[in-house]
Image 1 (cartoon, rainbow, N blue to C red):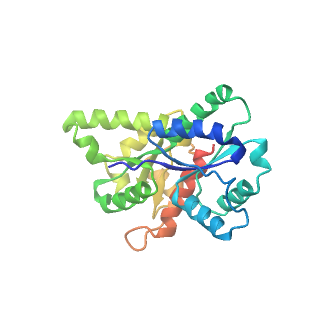
Image 2 (image 1 turned 180 degrees about the horizontal axis):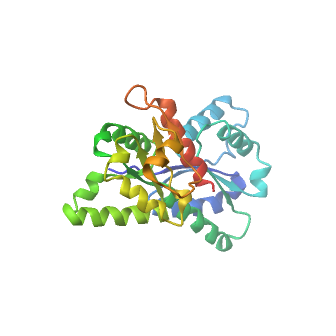
Image 3 (image 1 turned 90 degrees about the horizontal axis):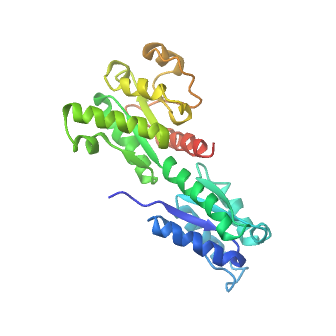
Length: 260
């Protein structure tokens, strides 16, 4: 079952009605938003501060509902200070200062970006299935939606599979992230044609190669790629799979790309 994105809504209690409307929209779209109403609680309660930090840690997206009230709120300030200490935080800022009907376009833009940036197509060679599963599982555990080859195969084999796969590559480059797992196996496999297709897109900022046990320049000579991709990650396995720190580097590049 695909996990739903969990969202922490950071806001001032004085904006509670506006933020409730945003929360309702998120719930309708099957996200899991969380908001607190702190005006009736003890502002000096250290236990409460620890509790809020744990709730932020438990969510995958942090949304700052910016307003003049939020700017002067000590609780919001603490939340912002804390989220800035978290590596790979998925942070969004939503200005709610305007009347809500004027805020709706920015809410819709935020939602569109959030949904788009949450989808990942992992391209890999069949021989790298174990590595592919490690990365896919890690991303899914961090609430990214990974398009898996086995899901495409359920819709048909042969040309039906190829046509559907190519369609999803094009769609993901436009509306998500395309991550080729570039290894020595990959450059010799038919899967490298997926990278070739993605490299012809106008949205090259959405193509993020994972060069594993390869330097980018070395791999590019094999793949004969001429497009200058703005983002990539060079990773090393130890010995056959990636370490936790290497996996976190993938999250870091995805998180920074979401903010572009």
